[in-house]
Length: 289
Image 1: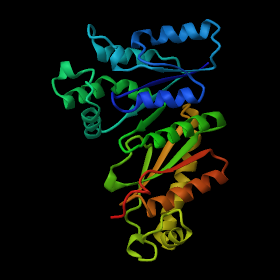
Image 2: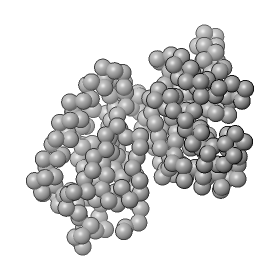
Image 3: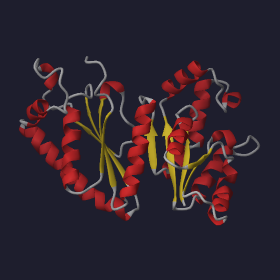
């Protein structure tokens, strides 16, 4: 039975994720007390369950208040079977505060921490060890629900490939913040910027004219070839440690031209090597500077 634990920070989008997984055919159970999760998994697996895929939300809500909560989650992370995968959702503190202000809901740790910011940071500390155990980490700070759905569906598609490590290639703008879940982040801001060319400003790195402009410079070609060589060299070693998903992010100032160019070209190059790839451009549709 395919089993996925959905966890992460309160307000980071776990309820949205479970809805997406339910639509994909997972049997989903929300807010299972963390100390009962492993028992529940064993019951489902040993009881002749008719479900092929199981998703369980386990987070701070079901941890109780009479024990050392951090220790409970640390032990839980240590005891998870190797074939149980973990999807960890998070967002930056400022965005989580905004979401709680909009929803007017109460953070589960607010009574212990006294302030909302304190509760969020306390929860980060409690879940720190579980985060290191995660197979997938999604930062929802800048994601709309449709973007979260796309990432999760890409994740499931890569799992189905099951032949080798899947690669998620993305572009972003440093002015909108770095994607903290990336395994590799490459900065392309040192390259000549198409933004300052009037005929290219309204285009993106998905357009051939922009790609041709960016890649005409020797430093662009050398940088790209070195990145491609690094990625192709490291991917087999990720397979050796049973890591199935690698995220590579390219960043420029606004996330529209140079980073998109490099993300598109790397995706194409990896596909030619028969490596399963998903491609997203986080900031491509945001307003021009």
